[in-house]
Image (tube, rainbow, N blue to C red; front, side, top):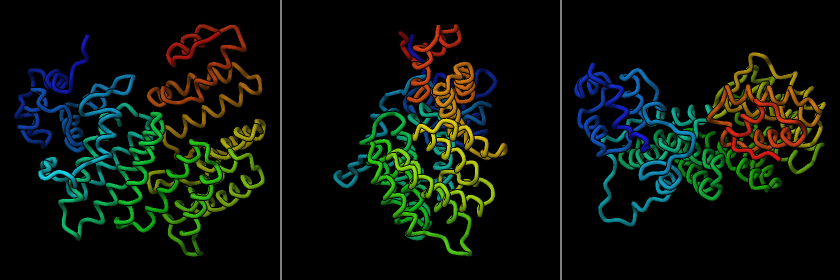
Length: 397
């Protein structure tokens, strides 16, 4: 059976209680957009418009778009569409038709905020549908605004490119992810946030780490950190950017199997987190005591120091303001530790908790699959373990 498109879902949600014009009036979008979507003349819209339509229909954007368990690939969404948005040919075409109604600077940042909210909620399928249109629209907005507005819009565009890059890493497209983060850095240099270009080199370092380039990952993070090293009276955003870079360098050092260097960098990060006080969200990520404790666990896991990992986990503040994806990742690390220590029932319980709290996130992660595979090999599979393995696509012995 064919999956209904966005137009069919809007018609279904609107039902007989609301006309197209009433939906347009309630949501604040144009009647022509509502008609075009319902008639399948358009298959997407700006994030701002989708949010307004979703609110008017008393639903969420994910429901409106019909998010599925696999990454959708169509003319307007999915990896192919994201790649097309990242490789424009505007400068090579005589007549370029940009999306109508460029965004305001405020709407541009709201769009970037929504992308990052979806990212930290692990909603990669939703991002696959939102990113192509968002990138095209933000780039068009950047070209259409006045020179005075351009730095602010450039910052929003840089953040959207960074969101695309980080998402593509999870989806297994490292080359396209690298293209996205390089575009992000270019845009950030034009932006009005002097910390942004340095802060987003966390993403560069992470991509290098995923590629196994651990030494370069540490070097990139620490070079950026040295550029913004805080003095006595530094503002909190500078502290969080510096702390995030140093703790990222620590994870690279751990993967390079350098325990002393890892401990040194974690100590610096912990000191900075103490100065920050509580976890804060700056520059598309969080930093504070909880973030450092979480990544200290990660470093101990990588270094095969499992009792040390459990000890580090006890330092994670109960009220730490970590986003959903970070909390799920922390549970993945702990579930792995418990399998190494022979605590299989605890590991399985953590996996099921993780799946319940972040069902979209877990489908794209390798570590939970690895833990499930280990459990399948080491014990007679319980029903709930076999069911989890099927849901994650893990084949047992």
